[in-house]
Image 1 (cartoon, rainbow, N blue to C red):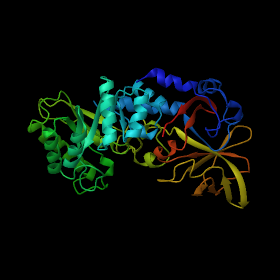
Image 2 (cartoon, one colour; image 1 turned 90 degrees about the vertical axis):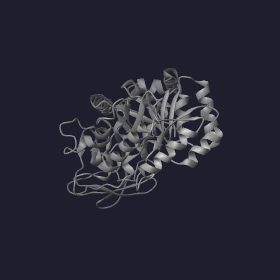
Image 3 (cartoon, helix red, strand yellow; image 1 turned 120 degrees about the vertical axis):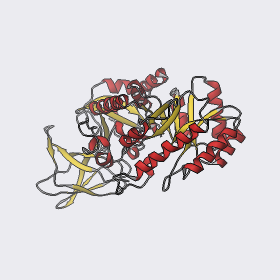
Image 4 (tube, rainbow, N blue to C red; image 1 turned 180 degrees about the vertical axis):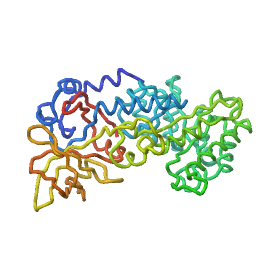
Length: 424
């Protein structure tokens, strides 16, 4: 990764483009503000704010890196979660094998910051994109790129445009999947098309198990387990056909943030003798975890799935102020759909910051609705708030929060210790 390009972000000037920042910071650089030790509530920050917890970020990166190392897996975290090169750099520093992308615009951001190994977890059939990719590969011999193919037609389109070799993985989607060949037989047909292509080289297989409908059968196996068994069968059959005879290491990839334990078990079982397999997880949301979707589904937070492991910690929170109390039991806050996620769960009310800086847990209240710029907080139990109070919320599904914030404060308690730039 180009560390100079990442470091240069600290030289960008802060102005009105970045919501939530203190007006007195306008004209200062990101680095100057990050180093100033500002307090979120005393130095002019304005609501709403979404912040990242420094200690939780570090904890989550360490836990995931250690677990992958202990299980013999490589990690290519999905960069679409954050689109933050500063965080990519830290993930790579913690041993990430590469960074995953989903589309050309993301890939161009990665390359602008020198990400040298990219797993493109999607098909790439756009002629303009393919020509740009070919030029980038020619320009930088150190750039390693692999994308997915899932149809004979897609292989043909790539072959028509490309004038240089590109590595590909055949994608197995399975019944009810997202993209990807719907059966092992269909995936083998795609692999055969790749073999006939003068420019494509098959280096493995992959897919996305989280798109498969959940459920446990009478054998105690889930549909995800059956899907992963099919993926193993695909790789084994392709190897038996000689598809990987000229490949030093076969990439097999899967793993969102909800089933990576099952993916790890499937990828680390014995493979046919002589087949050198690199299992690659693409989990991305582990970095911040959350207070909703992944708190409920992550293997590190479901004791019956990974007992004894260190749980991830929620590293993303929203702060908003009470702006109105139009009737008893109802408060309106300065936070809405333009600021926080709502596609999985509504924000979780957690605590109120009192005027003296202490906090009080809000245990009986809930957000019942979000407008574009307002949150409806229904007060319950002994909870109370006053106009002007700051309230902290937990968020669900970080992927749909980061894209609302081009600049996020990283905090240690109430003190800002860094600023993270995103590029969506």
